Image (tube, rainbow, N blue to C red; front, top):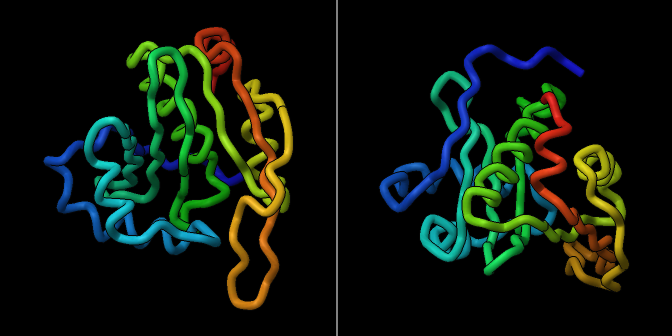
Length: 167
């Protein structure tokens, strides 16, 4: 892993940050096989969603989106600009996202991840997520490729995980 840049900051994005929508859409297109459309990205700036931005030198280079319910949260997406992948920024973004979920009173987290995305699976497992099942054909096929299964994962105790991480 490359060394983490010193000028990294993370914060919750709100409707006041809509000027970053083009950057969010670009990161989404660059980091996801089935990127969300512009309207879906736009909706994540408002409740009930919570978006966390990761900045390098004050430029948005990653973001995550969670959907909170009474005591749990769903990690809907997380992505880092390709140029900044491999620096440990995904771990920093995941940790900040879990902290924000906890601030919203969520103490457990659910997510889906592509069967083929072993890098993400390893990151989630490092943070205590356990594989709980498979969703057949969850991700639609693109460009003639067949649909892809998703692994469902669950983090039972966000507090315990955050107390045990140092990233």
